[in-house]
Image (cartoon, rainbow, N blue to C red; front, side):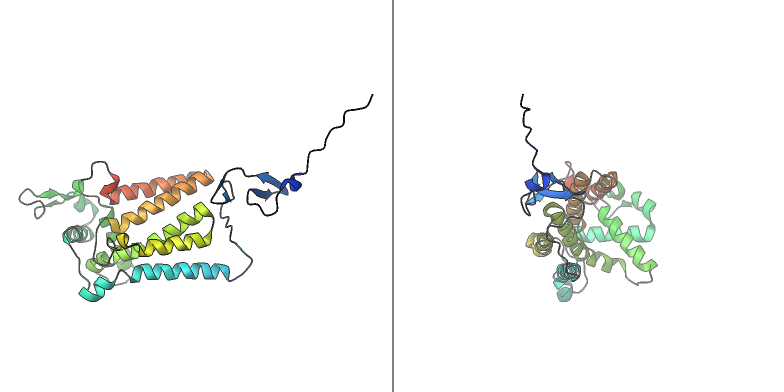
Amino acid sequence: MAKPVTKAAPSVAAEAKGDDPAFATISGSVMDQSKVIFGVPVSSPPGYDIEDDSSTLAPVLKYGLLAAICLMSFSIRLFSVVRYESVIHEFDPYFNFRTTKYLASEGFLEFLDWFDDRAWYPLGRIIGGTIYPGLMYTAALVYWVLNWLNISINVRNTCVFLAPMFAANTAIASYMLTKEVTKRTSAGLLAAAFAGVVPSYISRSVGGSYDNEGVAIFALIFVFYLWIKAVNTGSMFWAAACSLAYFYMVAAWAATSSSST
């Protein structure tokens, strides 16, 4: 009696279709990556870049372009400083400047208990319980660190240049977020450039516009990046970092609270 013929399973390597990104070689075998977003396997290894090449100048060019984008994002927000000198603009930014000046000079505990009789006149205002202090803490921390490093700067200039500085940070966060999603360096650089020049963001982050959006937009994009990083890697480290960044964003911006007006 003839034995049934068992058809040999095709080799895994033979199933790979050229350079199709739906397949990835791991430990000599090819694993089917059925979930693909933007042409990139979802389960691609950390740090994977679909555009990586063997050129030694590629990292230099990449980080050089990113540095140029950050410099552009910072510089285009200084026209008000060049034209009107280093001053605080508008009413809310000036109130934020007053509170930051008090925090920098009196300290954290005194700031929390401060009753400001010049705000909400004639009732006055308990500052520690009625503001989102992330902006003030950030500016005061920058002021303390710079003076600790013997870099002489006053609170006013720290507040004036804080938003343009964080605009450069926003460009970096946009690059990291887009590259994490698409695995393409060029897409990340393009996103960073757009984030640096978008008019609606420039209007809230020019030099002297010392308001919550100056740091909160960066925090928002950075939270998105950390959340996607945590989901992709399954790492508790990135999950904890995302939680801390979210806490900072909520502390800095009333738009994240349902009780904001």
